[in-house]
Length: 519
Image (cartoon, rainbow, N blue to C red; front, side, top):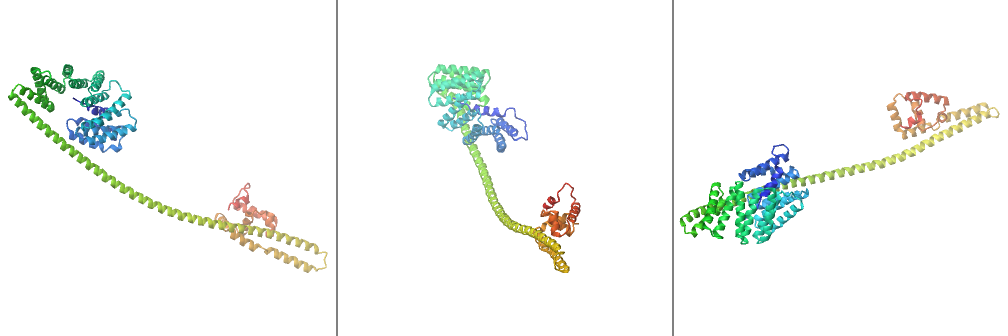
């Protein structure tokens, strides 16, 4: 009974059709390589594998849809070489991406996974995945003409038949046949007739089996499919040999199956038909012909065994190469991990250095802030002292002026001599001129050291007296107050202010006091 892996190639071709041009784009290039893998899968497996390996190098650069195609094709290729564990590995990768992208085509990959388990003899797993595949297929509202999905019914039918569930197998096969009749897929219809006939034989429905085989033969001849004709002839010949017992019919169908198989190099069918012909001629005691076909069968059997051994050797080589590749990947990963760890250590060391530098800078900043706060406090005290000195000078000046005025008034009405009064007034004037000025300028220089530097840097032609005037104006003293301190007339102060304004290049609308406060 034939079961189908046709869905493997069908699924893959859906992804690669129409994308054959070579491009620098990794997805287009990978698609081209995958198509070449599919093209050579049946004719040159070595070449197919080389194209696949080239495509697998691009897997980390591909879009999800192309990755799914890559993994399914890889699964197909390894399955074809009977490396089922490798095939499953790639099918599972494809399924994982498919599930993440919420694709509705996951039933195809599930069917492929079930097929691998079937070939490995794990029928329980095969059933599990084929039933999941069928459930996904039916819930995805597929096109009634979907050949790809219909093969799931055939595969489940094969499993049911092998486990003795013939009624369930027939139900599945009829659904498979109906869907392919709608889709007009003749090859699958022929396979349905063959598989239904095999179930009929299990149910002892020989005539029904013969009828289904004849319908299959008619379709196979119509589309000129020699393999299907030879296969159906062999089954029909076997029925006439063992069930209906019709020597001529048995010989006719078995001989035709043998001849077609020999002509088309169908070694498996040639082996089956030659074995049945040996039985036929042995029953008739025609030992000459029986011996002839026995030699053929033995030769084909040995060739089949050798081929099977070659497959096993090839499978071992593939698995060895795969392990080598995995070891290389592991070594590469270990190397990357070492670089990663080194990078982490380097980063941590750098982070510690940065942290220490940051802390050092933070401490320096904190120290500078503390120093600035201390300086600001001292400056505030000096400013208070400076202001107090200015006020004291003003008060002293007022007292002296008041005393001078009183003495002047006493000048004409006292018994004291004119010389004595004049002497007192002169001494007061002398005292007032020097009183507190030196101390005031000293305090101002200590407090506003940068004030003079900034002014001279921008206006280097300022005189000493103009700088002193700037100091008084910075303290926001009026012309009268400055006059009292310096014992100059208010008019002189106004004239000095006007000259200073010109030197500072100020317009009439600009405030001289506000300008100096900025320094």
